[in-house]
Image 1 (tube, rainbow, N blue to C red):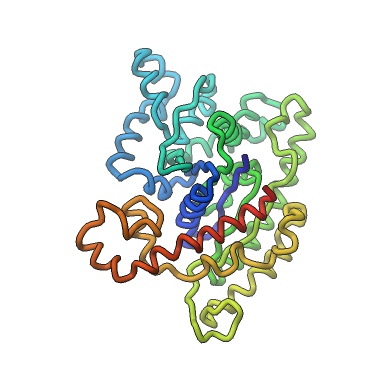
Image 2 (cartoon, rainbow, N blue to C red; image 1 turned 180 degrees about the vertical axis):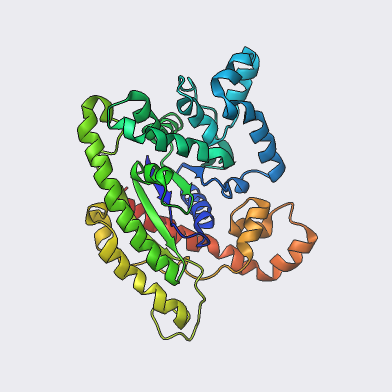
Length: 365
């Protein structure tokens, strides 16, 4: 199993759309895939739940998120068994460690989205766990077991799901921030990728990510040396691997005089991204399987061009873009706008398949 974090510290770059469709393409390629929503906004989760369903799930968990040991204490055995045997948010799974009590004996089942594709839903309250990481971070350097358990808990939960449910790939959606939660998520993942818009913000985003990575790698290297072999087994043995970048939502120009056939204003920024990668991304994060293609966008131009408004239809019907035209519940109003553009929807399947195959190649699996 390989875990991949999808991250950029700039919002609005199509990160969640990319994560969901990459996972869907992986599943279609026969790779059993788990999506984990660690962005407090929980937009990825809305590919698997209606807002009403998600509200019901969160309400069921409210007492446990407020005070897990107390909620467990006042629950009947039957009620506790019921709530822990149905899909739970990632914050619910992390909450026992956050509150300093024993972890769940058995992990609840994920939400099944499609064949080979499951989801661990997000929750707005994940900032509480991030605050706990921050408060315990320094204690980890004193080999405090609970602090180390807190830092490694996300990774251990992901690995547990991978082992028990035989996932090939876990794709983690993250928030657009360089805080301590993403420090943990990215540093303890096997790999990460950066979706980029063709603009100034993504160029600077690569610079910020590179600087942060250098600091994170030093911190975890020092932590591993201090805590010793007994406590370091769940800490990253090697730095996270940088898979590369995408250019996402660029305007396609058939007559453009550049190799990517995108509008000149977009091209001028897009071409700066490989140079930012070369200069700022730490060399120890770039593996041999990636080094020769590090200056090329993942999947080439396969997902580079703007999808216009069609990702909104994908999330509305909670299926990949390419499945929207044949959705059985497509409203008559939406059908009138989707049907004339059917090819545009359907062709995204081969595009994301190409993208997913390049990700698999860069993972070296």
